Image 1 (tube, rainbow, N blue to C red):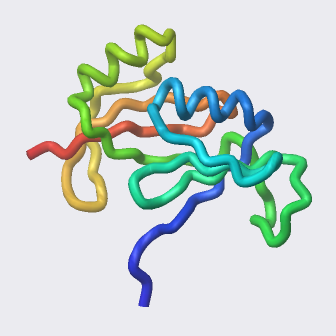
Image 2 (image 1 turned 90 degrees about the vertical axis):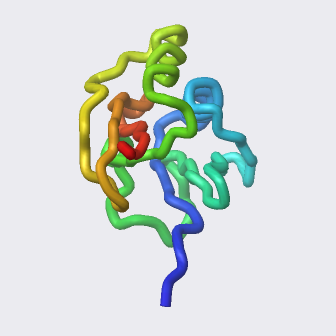
Length: 126
């Protein structure tokens, strides 16, 4: 019945700050939809930023900044990702550590976006 994920909404307190983080730190491309919605492209899907004070309907019952826990797959080795994050003074909260992903074991680094959302950057262990 379902074939995949089209977009995932991330509620943020400051869209400009979130766009800066996700483009500069994580290298995502940005597509502006309007003043309250921005898409950050991740392959063929989008991480859609919504501002906390938006009037957009429908929306989640309790849109809350900092409540997301998201695992992203990296094309680069994690040592390279870590060097990139350190060069930008982005704190790595944990890692590298071994975790279980949807398709097997992963090696992961954990960090937080400006709203406190937990981001896991992973690579398959194979």
